[in-house]
Length: 149
Image 1: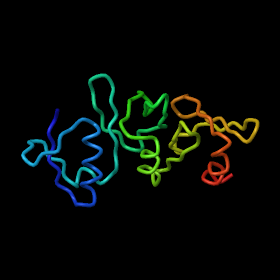
Image 2: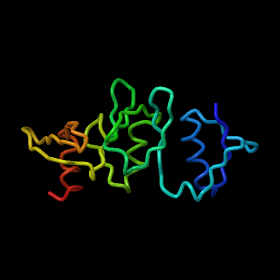
Image 3: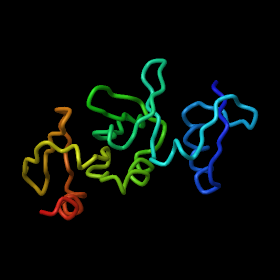
């Protein structure tokens, strides 16, 4: 386990502590590795792939998917496992253009390549990484409003 010392405002400390501990880090005052507020001005999440832990910015993420209680964070190059709940990704990145479009998907609207209308008030999205994501009926109108249709 890697120890990290946080040097940031109290407002960010709670959020970062949760994110880092969920990613497998230990928060300690005597740690050699120090994360300062200067480095964390932009929000981020951790992605896990094999033995690697990667720092992912909102602009790196195409969409987040939930399958059988597992979370997968899709980028242009890789699919990572995530430690947060789907609704946490939605809330964390809402101001970066992320939107819930299905009970299993939160997308980055900046990463939509094509929108194809489907039957029964649904859309099929082709994302920039070539993956397809369905906008379900429950999220249809919210999606239309956000996109500006």
